[in-house]
Length: 166
Image (cartoon, rainbow, N blue to C red; front, side, top):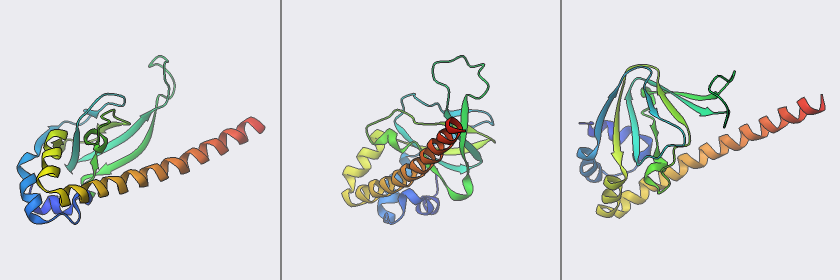
């Protein structure tokens, strides 16, 4: 079972009171995966949040759509996440849109905990205030991610413009 102290350190649960975390704690399911395991596959459906507590994962995005897998470059590495920061991913799975937006691949043996949409919804109904705080933290994370995506899009458009003009 995930420790309460660990839950309190996860950015998604910042400012959630200990009573609400204690309610949530037994609803997390442990998931152990081996190095090389695809934890999330882009464009598949999912309905759970993941918390990485041990190991390292890589976040990638498919680049080539509709071509053979033998293409020279088929995916872009977006990030490497270490358990040191207790990262979460898959939040959109509990927000109603369960389509996964990236691939998550284990770069080492990993220990994760998952929380299903049903369990998250029950938590939010049990404690509206705590549910609101978690949703606000999810919104903050998604907003930061969108900002990073916008910056990368500008860089890509600039590089394309220079390449076409050059």
